[in-house]
Image (tube, rainbow, N blue to C red; front, side, top):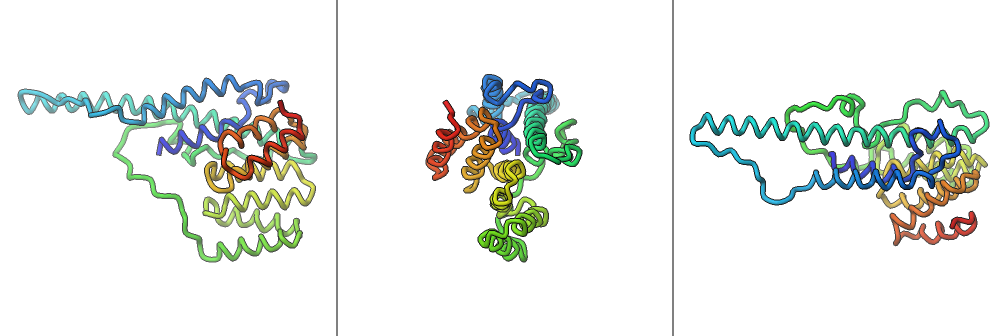
Length: 280
């Protein structure tokens, strides 16, 4: 679970705004690349700690049963302390990444006329970790292995998606955007969720709502950062940021498409968009 959490955090933080972006309006994503590099190093350290380094070195030697029990107890205390330290560090990364995603959503809302910032709500924590779990990690029984992501469709899920997609293909953008929004609320975390957010962004694009479209593309990427629709979502997000005048943020985002998905068809589109925007 912690390994997936670390990976999810690494992927999303590259797009997120700095936690203090609201306090310094001149700072952009390009300005904090050095900070992100430091953060990547810290995350790599976390990943190393989640990997084994060879044969276990735990020693429970003792000449008597009581001595061995004392050695086991001491080793358990040491491992518990190390686990708590690691959980605390991962929790700090999760909170920081969540804050940066929230900052980006805040800035997108500021760009949209009539957007009510108070309606944004609280940004969900990265990795789907509960607030209490991140804030107060504590030792306990060994948790069961995490279940695999849901890959089976719910009853009616494919039919609902197909109806929304048919509206999009018919260029009924208003109805398609509403249908995809309803679909995302009805089947959160489902196998079609990322594509639903992506297609909702296309519908919003057709309605001439670039800020809402950018937010939908961000949700599409955030919901599945390594899935088949992640490159397209990331490309469309970068392109839309460029259209909104966020040139530096757009260049960084489009560059991430090339860096993360070098074999994806969206790479060519990202390079073309970078040239149009005038990225260095």
